[in-house]
Image (tube, rainbow, N blue to C red):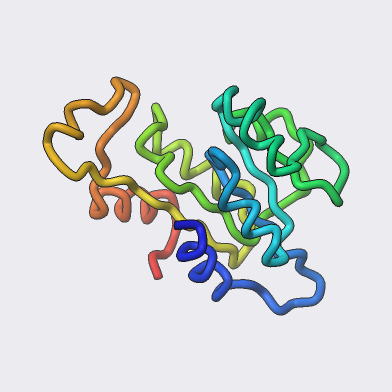
Length: 166
């Protein structure tokens, strides 16, 4: 899966020599995508709320939880809102933000999208992947803090947040 998404995202890589091609992956999970993006030349930062992923999986990829070392792949154990509020990124903006299968986990998906806009470079891109339950039985098993968001509703939410669909 990570290769397919990265191939699409690489089409939007800037050739501006001043840009660092910074990518923020929200809900980076096991870190597979950010590892591939880093290997492809992106400066990557990930956020992940799963304690298990941050403590057990991500360290095996040689990621570190270091906040200021630009030469270290960084993963923050936090939500996007806390990342923006507490961090450290007040002057950092991202060329690309990815949020694969996390929008439906947000208590307020619209506020989440507004937060992403706060840290996106002008002309930057956000890539949102929405998981689609394959069956009614899978939909009924969703955790109580999950929402089913159709593609059409996701597009409307992005447009309401001020994003242009391309």
